[in-house]
Amino acid sequence: MPRATLLDPQGEAVERALHALGFGEVGRVRMGKHLVLDVKAGSREEALARAREMCDRLLANPVIEDYDLAVEGGTA
Amino acid sequence: MQRVAVIVFPGSNCDAETIAAARQAGSDAYRVWHRDTDLQRPDVVILPGGFSYGDYLRAGAIARFSPVMAAVTEHARAGGAVLGICNGFQILCEAGLLPGGLMRNARLRFLSRLVRVRVEATDTPFTCGYEPGAVLEVPIAHGEGRYVVDARTAAELEAGGRVVWRYAGENPNGSTNAIAGVSSRGRNVVGIMPHPERRNAPVLGGEDGARVFLSMEARYATQHAVDLRAVGDRHLRV
Image (cartoon, rainbow over all chains, first blue to last red; front, side, top):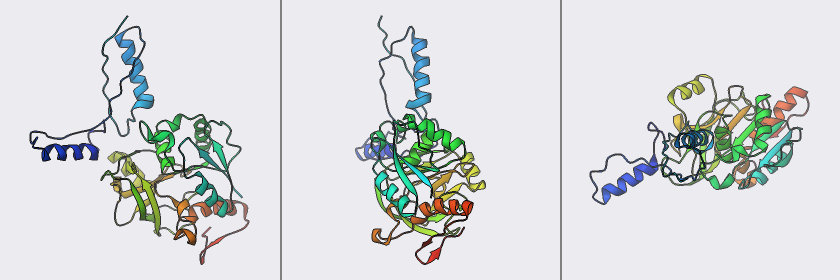
């Protein structure tokens, strides 16, 4: 996601479009990216730690973006 | 004569003009493919404009991990001159060689047109041939050209004289403090969003960008007390 303090023109454009369609209850819209990764890991914690490393090195740019991580599923 | 390495990434598309502009200024300019790890002993490295890796993920985010970037970083850390133009600027920010980052233009549209910029710093290898405060007409061509830094870094850049070019009059992309180009603390790494290589000869509509390339040679001329060059009716300030 673009950092909260930075202008997000895409989010604003979506916000205006929603208002124009009558969804007046919508407040601020922020628009980012959603990446889904299949990861082999021994545990959820390990998967999270590796994903965090991926975010810090490549997937997110901390100068302009914030990110959140979630582990879903998990198969043996 | 300066040896100028122009790095070519998959998706770079301003390398030919950049090499032509550097040669026009008297430099020995050559291409280096992004998979190469040897820059062939350059004096100057230029990262040209384009859309490296299709701007996937973020502009410059993937290019910064190209094999050649280790050598570029080493060259920069050793005080070597590095210029990033447009996508090259984005790559230098992603690589951490320049502060800040570049985001979608404030009004979202891709902008391809002339803008005016004021030369704010003439103590870099790429602007030493300009008069301080000179206003130039140069083209921009970018969708993600809004330079952003946090307030503290912006204050540092301003106080340190590291804003190299600033949009004059209209700020086309909504960048912080109307910044169009910045330098590293050591002044040797410079990133600019406008394209000086597209504006270096009368046949291109103007030559306000020529001195970016002539500056590299002028600096060399100063160091080695050899030839000076003239652009239009003016001689370079050296």
